[in-house]
Length: 97
Image 1 (cartoon, helix red, strand yellow):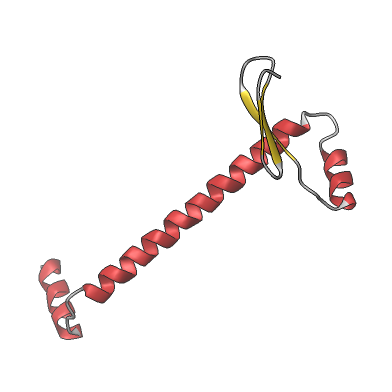
Image 2: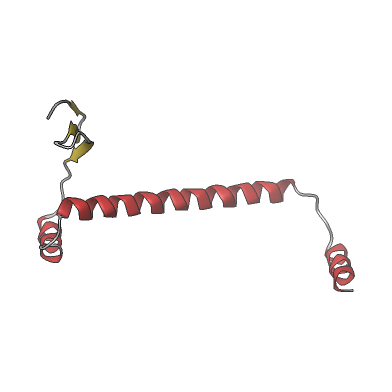
């Protein structure tokens, strides 16, 4: 460990390949740990957790982008010019000709 940085629940270190990696401590129920250990007994658990964290972060960011898009559409709708149903039906009829 050439260098390290500490925060409340993590420690950033430089591994033997010269890459910076985070070591993070989380408290989880014993039954969850036992289930995880059973399910992933033959694989690198750090890699599994890293992949799950990446997927969760990407999912959350995707949800945020969707919420932002809906908010933008709703704002646009509030600011849009109001038209009557008759005007919409007339425009549709003209497009179908």
